[in-house]
Image (cartoon, rainbow, N blue to C red; front, side, top):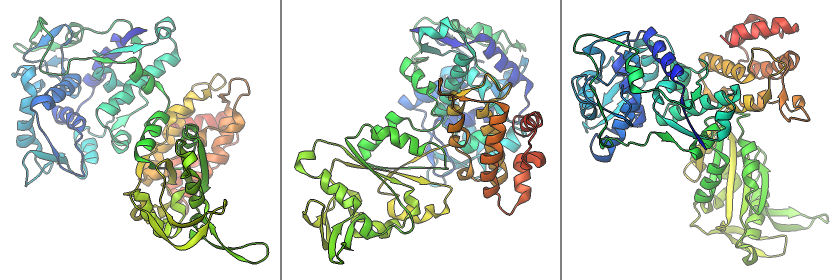
Length: 565
């Protein structure tokens, strides 16, 4: 195993980037991300408590966001808290956040800023009138930050991540230092940006509105940047020089581990984007017994379901649809070939009956429901919906007979039965499902994942274009125009099976294949989502792409112009 760090050149490039930007109230932008790390949102009030273990945790987040000293070797005094948004070539006393306060005490000054500066109709924070220790964001905080604080300029996600992890050590395979390849650098970029999004709880709306996610690569090296090297990037006015001292003992005022473990690196490197991993979903399913995977079409819900079912001894898949009935699912009267009526158990009751046999008690049964929101769940389950609470045994209205001839008069879901369902959030019938199953299932949201597109792609015959970036470009335009995250395109639209290479298994992209995919798969779905509004369609794709360009060279140039700016 080897240890790598964000390349010092990338940290310096990050500093240069932020120096070149101009923001309104930059220290308040920095504090916004501290509040995000503390899980503030616009839905409910959250407590701000900078005492005890919470103080150590918040101080650590503050350190990652703004400290000018390397806590592995140095201790910071006054004038060391510099948010990247406040950076300038020459640093004044007023450039620092609470510069006259020693770093270990700065977190205690944040609440003063919250109450004295940020509780204002023109700012993004709101205070609970009944509890002065609780805060939440304004309903329009994302647009407010983008327009008023960022002045309509997006933050480079890569540059912020390079700064945030400037002092971190990453435990990686030896192969990383033996092969400084573009693929490894891209993987490292993915690790840093995903970890940043995770640490700061950045939402999809915040990401699409406030961030540029296409701004280059974060490289790594075996030597990290020092605090002294960072401080040397700035000039300082008189009496504004950072107070930094040699570290004589480990810091005690914040969590001191500044590393990303090998296990976390592996998990972050996996191309699952912002979606749950197979392992995490399996654990959640075992713990909760009932899970619904919800998201736009093509985001990998069915794919991960197929992966998860391998860990079960038995599985059964049914697709819900408007005509599915209680009699088919739970059971009811049916006619045999002689026209005789028989009380017959339905597919779910039959499945549970088999799982509940004594000889099957140690086996795991997985019942899978595809597109659960397409059926009328209340009617399909009927009175047995109570059994989903797991503590109920439901008396059936009529006696039913299983395939093995057993008479069934009551129904209870056995402990060894697990239910995994998927639902298409682009289908507006989703609201009909919420009341029936929302409290009885764990819900996992799925998002478009361009990482897996690039991971599954061979670009050797496609110059200067990555299809994952094309996908991101389309989705950014669609969200901007339609304002609905449920209508974004999932990765399956950009993973054509007919283009996979038989030897490598990867999609071997050429201009012709990309043009064919775009013209005959991507454009039709966007046309469907913008049906009846030609202006929306043109705002997303431009005038030329909508016409399905046949010339490959012209197609590629227009694709770059419209979606890869």
